[in-house]
Image (tube, rainbow, N blue to C red):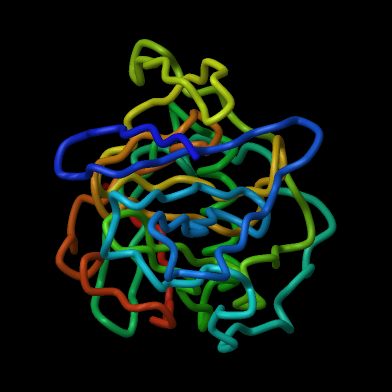
Length: 252
């Protein structure tokens, strides 16, 4: 199997993302005794980022749903029939998200100008206390911490889905790389502390989000809607299963 190494900042990993508008393949590594290790690093139930054997510290990790934490609050799943759309400017502009976790407090600037739909969704769910008591169900060292699933399995959501938002080229320049099939693929820099939507394909955003643990490169398929501005030390130490005690939206 070919591998392609993308290097950005302190993160050096063999990352291969494969994307199809028809289907998203899941890959399970059953035998970690082989010379080359390929791990599942999923940003959602069905989108998979493949980590190659360069990332030796990831060996023997399993990111399938069978290994997810079971501490989610499934009674909150599918609570809402439709997304809130775009809220008034007064509700989403010049705002920050203050996430109180079992490990400490994280503050994130929200990018309402860049991603008004995603920010509106986050503000709406936070104001509804939707996130209270949920967990970070997935952590991949040197990559992401992911949460916001009411079931704690990686496959739950609020009951609706909403569209992706275009990530502007002037702010996030594209770099072209070759995927494992030798086909060109655009990637962008997702900076350490970036807040982005997890999804299961085009226009399937819900309540799940992830925060980058290190600088990295991914296809521009995950709407970036914020950035950590305080509590980076808390993000660094958040374990899988850490509780989101409260998310509050405050003025910057």
